[in-house]
Picture (cartoon, rainbow, N blue to C red):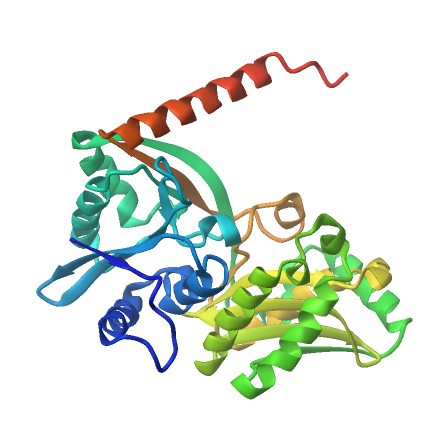
Length: 365
C-alpha cells in the first residue's frame, strides 16, 4: 500500500519525475474505468481548481501487472476530518475508486480500512466492486455503514433513437411540435452538436456558461459563472477531454443567438451529461426540452448506446425522459481509532437528530 501526496502534481513541464510516474500509472489504469469521473483528467482538474490547498492522498495498490487500484482521497483540515473521494462534494457526480478487477478491489479495501481516519465514498454505483469488497473486509477493521444515495438516471438508446421524437407517446410528440412552433415564431431555429478542438473550446464554453447564467441557476447560485473554482474545473476538465475528441457542447440558437446548451462528454460509447442551461427569456418554447430531444438523436446517430444524465433523478427527468437509473450507495467506514470512534459518534448523533425531527415534524396541514 502506498499513500502518495498529490499536492505537488500538476500537468505542467515542472512536474516531478516521481509525480509524473503516478500520473502515468493512473492514466494507464484508466482503461479499467467505468465512469468518466474515474479518469485522471477529472481528478487532476478537481485537485488543481476545486481543492488546490486541501490535503489529498493517492491510495494505490500494485500487483504483477503494475498499479491495479487507485483511490484519490481528500479531506478537510483538522484532527478529526475524514477522507472522502476527490470531488464528490464539489461536483456531486457518481464516483468510485479505480479498480482493475474484483481482486484488486479486495486489496484496496484492506488499504482503505488501514487508514486511521474515517473514509466516506458519497455516491458509488452499487455494482462497483469496491462495495462488495468493503462489505467483506471492513468488519474486521471497524464499522461500515452502507446507505442508499442518489441514483443516476439514464436512457438506453440504439439506432431507433436517431429520430428521437418517435420514441415518445403521441401526446409528447405533440408537445415537442408545439414547442418547436413557439421557438420558430421567435426566429430561425438551429441546433448543433459541437465536437470542439482545443483551440475552439474556450469560445464555445464561454458562450454556453453565459447562457446557463441566464436561467434560475444564477439566482440559486448554482450556475458555473457564480463559482470561479467550478468554472475553472469544468474549463480544465472539458478542455482535456476536447484534446481526445470527447467533449460535446450541444446548442440551440434562435436567429444565431444561443438559447440553450449542454456540456457533456462522449466516452466509452455513452453520452455523459454534466450541465444543462437555457435562457429564461425564451422559456415558453421549452428550449431545454427541444435541445434534449436533439441531443438524444445526435447521440444515437453517433452510434452511442446510452445517455447518462449524471445528476440526481429529479422529477423533470423521471416524468419526462426516463425512469431507468443506476442505484448508488453511500459508504462510510469508521476504523477502530480515536478519529474513527469520534466520527461514528458524531454521525450517529446527527442521524438521531434527523429521525427525531422527522418524527415530531408538524403536519403540513
